[in-house]
Length: 208
Image 1 (cartoon, one colour):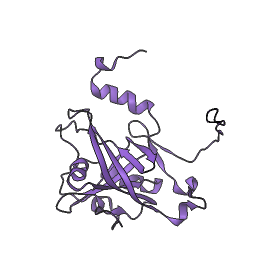
Image 2 (cartoon, rainbow, N blue to C red):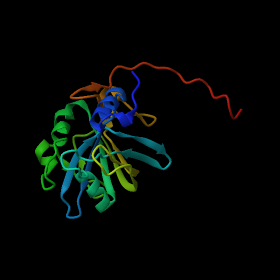
Image 3 (tube, rainbow, N blue to C red):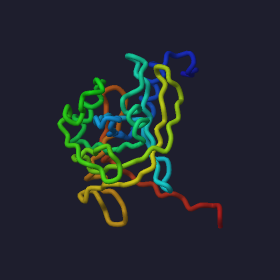
Image 4 (cartoon, rainbow, N blue to C red):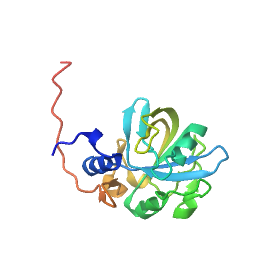
C-alpha cells in the first residue's frame, strides 16, 4: 500500500500515524491559567530533545469538535510554565479521566482524584502520585497548523526534576521495573514498559 497524505482526510492519516508510531510515551501535563486555575491533561506526542540544557517537548493538537486550542496550550502561553508528570500503570485510569474534553473551569486533579502538590520552581502543581516530575519553563512554541488536525510544538527547559526514591538507582538511573511506565498505542490500547532486551551499541568510527 502506497499512500499520499494529501489524498487522505486528516483523521485517516492520524489513524495510520498513531498505529505505526508506537509505543508513545505519555506527558501528563499540569498547568495553570492566568487566574491560577489548574489543568491536567495527557499528550502522547511527547519526547526528549536534548540534555544540555535539559529540554523536552509535547504537542497539543487542535480540537476537532470546535477547532480550538487545548486549555494546556493557552495556559502555557499565559504563564510560560508547565510540569510533565510521568504516568505509571497504577495511574492509567486517572490519566484517562483527564483526557476528557472539559470546560476550562473544571479542575481535572479533582475529577481524577489525584493530589496536586506544589512544585519547587514553577507555579503549576505536580501530581503527587506520579513517581517522576519535570518542572519546565517555556522555551518556545512552534505552530505547525491552527486548523483541525494541526497542532503546536511546546518546547520546555527543565528547571527541576523530582524522582521518587523507589525508582531511583545509583548512578542516576531509573528502575524501569518499579516505574511501571505505560506507552500509548492506537485506539483504546496501551502497553506496559516491562519487557526488555539489550543491544549494545557498536563503538564509534569517527574522532579516533
